[in-house]
Image (cartoon, rainbow, N blue to C red; front, side, top):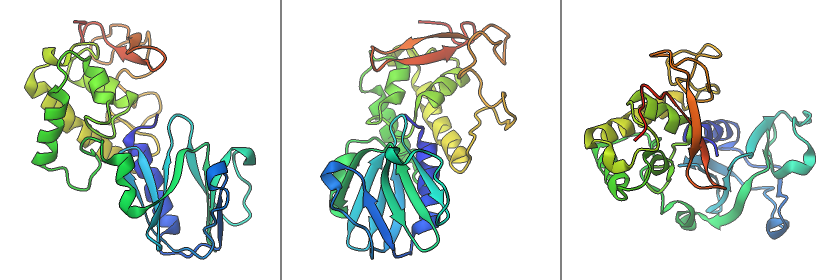
Length: 266
């Protein structure tokens, strides 16, 4: 599942390409929505909420989608060849000068804007709201502490705790504060939990318009992450080989990367 910054960038690009334009064509290639057409509809805005994306129209309806593991939106010039096979296209939105195509999209629905909450009301504070306030921070900390026996990494992945964190950030954040992702939430000091959430906001916000995110501060290829996807390579702090294990129960378990020395297991 993509990180929140990926969804933010996708929404930003779609908004730049389509907002304020009347569509000349468009369809949803989904059995339940096969009769829907967007020709003549004005796109008012495209917004991300956590890992959900809404394309809003002037008739007060919203097209909702979720990228999950393999979904993506592409932008093309009129007549440009698509970079993925046409049978993977689920949504096509056509303006005079741009064509937006959603491939392998999940949870597609066309809903009244007033009912968008059915998808996002359960989410925790969104780390990519324009203004992250002390109230957002406090609510996220409260939700994080609500299940003290849960593994810290799993709690961070739970979108009902805080919205926007995916597996990349879980691994990187746990390394940055020297905590094992397998440690129970109760074993992580309260001030560290607060530090992790504040750092999560900082990293996602800094990366929201980048294609290649960085958590180390370096944008050079191969040096953008501390531990994520670096199994058996030396820890950037102490030189110990980075280890891997599985976090959570199958089939939803995720791979976790960590330094056994900098992040001792519980």
